[in-house]
Amino acid sequence: MGSLQGQNVVVIGGSRGVGRSIVEAALGEGATVLAVARGTAALKELSWETSGVKTLAVDATKETAPDAVFAALEPDVLVICAGALAPSAPVQEQSWEDFSANWEMDVKASFLFCKAALQGRLKPGSRVVLISSGAAFSGGPPNSGGYAGAKRMQVFLAGHSQKESDRLGFDLRFMALSPARIMPGTGVGDRGIDGISAYMGISPADFLASMTDMQTPADVARAAIALATGQAQGSSFVVSGSGLAAAA
Image (cartoon, helix red, strand yellow):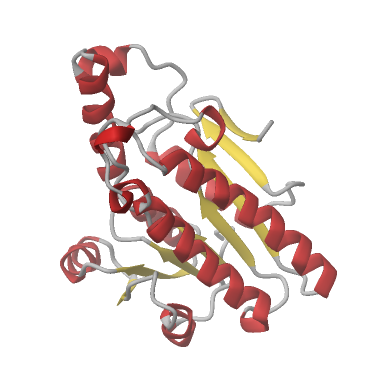
């Protein structure tokens, strides 16, 4: 029997990349899984290729998104993995729209769903996992705009939400999970690899060769499932090629 047998898992941003890996891992653990994304084409591809998954096309940055998602499937585990592509230009060449893209997507979606959870929309015992980034701790490269700050805010938001849940006696668990390294084969990762290597004046292959202890989307998915089903203490965690650990 899987570790999520009989439970509902909702993955916001579940149609591709890390989100899709989490969808597949949750299905493998026996969960009923709803993948939520904006793009209908990617959701259709997911449903064709992944037996048993439910899908819902919703923009997670809309104020009404939590209502629509929770009406489709009430989650025992809610994973927020939706994110914009990070900018890829020096600060002085970015517009505010470029710089704030990850605040308007990653942070806003996390905020709206954490807010809904703290308004009593999730039942006691539910778990919320925000997928952040190692850039939240390293600061990221100087051509990535507000990406690192946005991902750090997700870490803060998980901690703030946990304290508020405890204060209100809601018995909810809020956790942020940060993949430590950039990941090729994902939209965010491939964009980042191309942008950072160009900024540094080296080839993408040389940039990747300099990386160590890299995790894969499957590693992140296993870590998310471990947090959703375990009793780990704290609200901030990092996953690398070496495995899952509490954030320093």
